[in-house]
Amino acid sequence: MTGPIATLILVDVAAGSRLWGYSRFVTGRFDMSDIPGLSFFRILGSGHDGGFGLRPSASRQGLFCLFDTAATADRFLAEDPLVVRYRKHAGEFLSVKLHTYSCRGTWAGLSLPVVTDTPTSGPIAAITRASIRPQRAAAFWRMAPPAQDALADAPGCLLATGLGEAPLLRQATFSIWNGVDDMDRYARTGAHLDAIRAAHRHGFFSESMFARFIPVDLQGSYKGLAFG
Image (cartoon, rainbow, N blue to C red; front, side, top):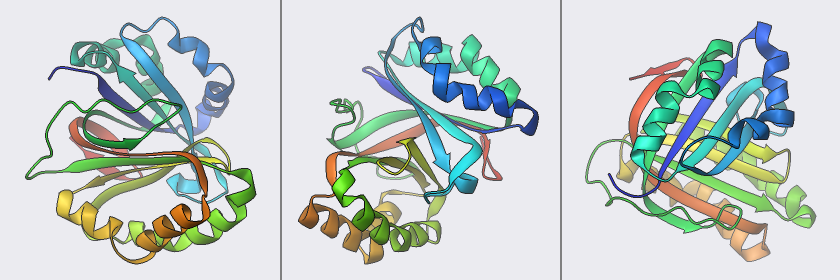
């Protein structure tokens, strides 16, 4: 695989390591300055119990990274001291490499480079993220629960979790699906389609990105689900 490769780490910080987990949001960016091949990263919080609501989780969080090559992504996940610390402090730990096959929009001005073709079979993953306009936040959060409930129960959805750079205004969702058809069926029907139409009609977002990936080397567990 050539071209930039994304990685995502999801953790449920162990009860005895909560102070370490909280410190990630304050000082975590300083751990990212010397990682070879790293071109972009975001330290992410989560909703309660890994969900999508306004109540924050005290333990669940994520780290999204973009590396210049698959080799640098592999070394990071396999041996970087930061990842070793994540594993040490985690009650649950899940890591995945993400090969982008579609990306619309941007994240902090970045559009993820497409590095592979749309798969014809097998699992896919998706990240949706948005910067919500403050004056539209109340309307957005009125629309969000039905779409989130539909995602949790969507056929073919293997894992879904809420993520965010900041409470209320910078939100994201990560999901893994059995295949493209299952993802499309959810995205283009029901409450999710209504929410997307409302977002466009009322200008909820100042920036948004919708990216799809082939998940590679999915290892570990999250929200009680084991992979790998």
